[in-house]
Length: 286
Image (tube, rainbow, N blue to C red):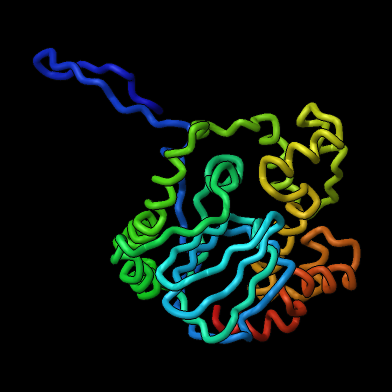
């Protein structure tokens, strides 16, 4: 329920409420994890499909992030924002020390703020000495669930995001709402039907678009094709189910894969390890 734009209180006092906008006021923040890493040329990977946003802050060394439309050279003293589904590969040039966190800034219909605006980019943090301290605070708060710590975690994430939001606000055509409203029914259908077959034809029909137009518009809106988006959501669900100690066969079936071989091969392509290896590596930490 939303308040009136103008309200009247005791003694006839009249005030004007600030009404929520369609983007920033709707954000739900969540930090998945945060760490500081000291590594070398072994820090390398490719063919990512990640459903979360990333923040990197480089303390020393250099690395390269590769995207469909170019590369970013990661340098000391810079903070980097990588929106979901955009990173293709990364590699370090040598010894490399950096902070990192994975997070979401979700809106309605399973959207993320940085899927709507914001390209991968870096910001020089010379005038932002609080950045390492905010990362340290995030790291210290991981695995803690007390309400005050959860709120503090969101505050530190906001402090890290603030320079990027400021930069986005300087864009001449800054979006104030999600401009692809006709795609929301398709996103909802994907969200509730991951365990069932999903056809592009069906998704296009509920969006009142042709399959070709739907696929183009989806890719333009989210920087990922609908097929790869569905696949990424199924792999995300599969990870959760594997950590819940379901068998690989059960997970394959519940995530909508046609057979166990297809699931295992796709899972390894997406994560770099087989479902069994994933369970051995992470199930003990849950």
